[in-house]
Amino acid sequence: MASTSPGSLHDAHVHTVTGELPASMLGRCLSHVHLLGGPTERPLGIDDNDDLHLHDEMMIEHEMRKLTSAGITTLVEMSCRDFNRSMSGLRRLSESSKIAIIASTGFRNGATARAAGYNPISDDLVSLLVGDVVTGDDGVLAGIIKCGSGKGDMTVDDVRVIEAAAVAQARTGAPISTHTAHGQHAVRQLNILRDAGADLSHVAIGHLDLERDIDVHLEILEQGAYVIYDQIGKVKYLNVDDYGALLERVFEAGFADHVLLSSDFGRQSYLAVYGGTPGLAYVASTFINELEERGLDMSRLEMSLTDNPMRFLTCQSVNCPDESATGALHG
Image 1 (cartoon, rainbow, N blue to C red):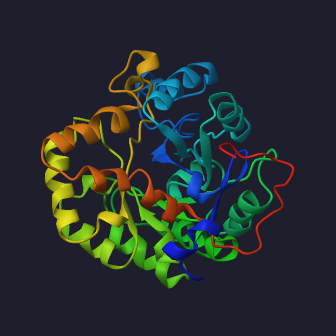
Image 2: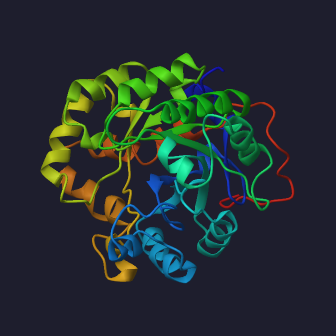
């Protein structure tokens, strides 16, 4: 598939839960969030597991109002097939909030796929993913494909999940966003995707801010993929100064145009509406201003919320489904 060049972006589009949207109208975008869903498996204690479930649409709608105040107009919702997603719920949230939402299909990794009842070895995962992008679930199309690997050694199931995402991308033109366990196996994920036919210019490696080896970040970027720094606001991992140093290195290396910023808040305790902190609006309302105060270029920081998601998220297919019956927001 050919990559989208800057000159062709006026014709490019993304698939949101309410229909097709010109890429140029995405505005400020958070590239990895969770609004509705929770893990199928229960690997943690009961109390902790309850914190991981987001199912109250009214509460989430209130949280999204804070996003509007922060200028966010698009969200990439990464609660996929093994995360108890609600495609119809996302459509309702998008319609009520007037924020465009791009929904995901796919699996976090092989183990979570199995926990949700899928067999990566024998099931036709490609058909499932293609169906979600082309036909949809409950009449709602997915606009991005998720895949990834778990903690420890990469498994055969992980590889199958990643390969299926690459093949589905080749058939649909949808972008791919990966899950890494604390940044592990990032380069291997990218190599598997490339070897299976993925267009790396529409691939983003997630959670890479938890990988402390900057050479790994640069290797990903040098291959033309995007990096998502999406643990922002989780102070148990990195603080603002840590991010300032990381982004400064990446910007100085010439990759400001391939960085995406977001907050992967899949817990109630991170959301302001539940009394948590810092809230989903933190990146856009506070974080980038704190980085500017530390000397980072605001224009480059804004690129991570605007121009970069616009290029990454564009659909590359010339055979998109007919969405004339739906009406995308911002139109």
